[in-house]
Image 1 (cartoon, one colour):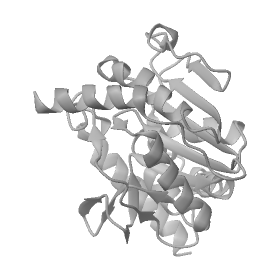
Image 2 (cartoon, helix red, strand yellow):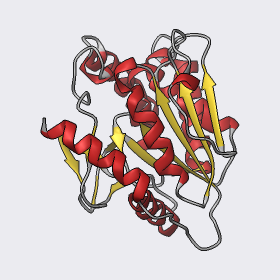
Image 3 (cartoon, rainbow, N blue to C red):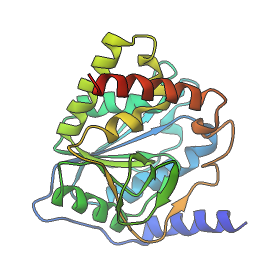
Image 4 (cartoon, helix red, strand yellow):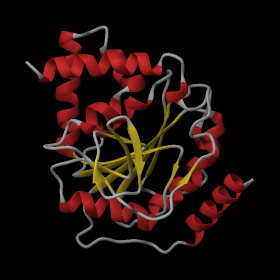
Length: 250
């Protein structure tokens, strides 16, 4: 019941929150990937929240479930909004392909269970603008432990990613090397390890930041909905880690 209250409180705040701006309107694209029908209720208010940021030049929602039409779930109208229905099943990492085709200086990639508000998005982007050589987020892992809403370095970001176009380019440089040397591992990146690769795309460890109270979808850890709770997720992830570190040590 409390999680349901938090969700509807967040939905209300997406309506009444004030618009946010940043000087010089930094060229920023937001990409949201979604798949499971249980999370589709998050997308319309999430899009509304992001579009309250005047500096966002494009919001792209990639629906990775060919059995669903995203237009049936998103009623927000804005010239900056682009809804894409993938013709075949895609995994979360496909969002970086979308990013590479929607060129901008800055990108914010948001998981569909991460319910952010306009002022929080602004804080995150400001950190990226201030320190553009590394990736930034709000949650992440370090030494096997999960952290959120702190000012600290982490090894791997999770759930939300603020990066530059240079990070996106570096992401594909790394994945191309993995594809050439470990072709059997390459498909696993899109499914379960794109966060690991983008976290290695900066000049140093990524950082997470304190943006205030976080709201998460109640399905964030639900088996059968949350991909990271799948039976083969950790096994596939470890294969990518092994390939990545083998390459980096050469």
